[in-house]
Image (cartoon, rainbow, N blue to C red; front, side, top):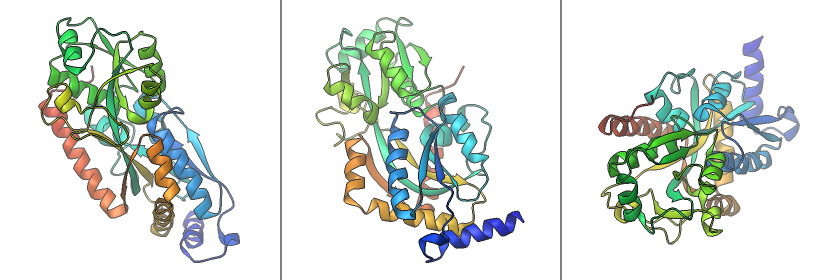
Length: 319
């Protein structure tokens, strides 16, 4: 019976059928982070565009916690019938499984639909932190080992790894304070409950522009269009070759019938061709980096290998 239902759904998604042949139950896109985080911004924009392309409602379902692992696990264990999508990102997919035991296997339990964007990160502090630029920041923190704290969007999240990489390269000894997402972490940075963070441009730029955060450098090797006027950390902090960014895309539970995956991929493809999709994503601090399923699968393998290399070379561990 289950196979019959899946086949029926697959035909409904894949065929060039009229709108009345599509399933009428809303789809959901699980977002493993709270509202305002980069993955949430991408997920909501894509949910809206998929609703238009598929002719049925796609609902954003935020399931934050544990560095993105709670929501990712919800999606990984969902029925593979095309009704559940995942707003997937580097932390829970490419990084967490390398650092700790996770309740899902990102290769076995999830299938790629499309990568959508990459997310540059920015080193930020509260405005009164006594350092005018990145080199002064490094010198000041380095001179006070164990005194300062950094916030991240969760233990094992991309922000955690990137900050640990920055700390390692800069020779900093600091204390990690994990949060359930980038927004609560940044709120505590702005109120000086913790001194700094390395978080996405999507989450930080509005606060930087408002003067509530001080920016010291962007994580990509070259300047980023989504962080205008902010120098790369590679040069600003004298960290040659420092170059990291997160990926954010769409995945589904493994076992989702191929026709459904193809239908969803085609809908994302068409959405990405709409100029306003790119404008909305860019305005949210995200760089377009669209990849179809096969290319996305290869990219995921490359990302796992790259993050594994970063973790090994910098001796990064979760205590």
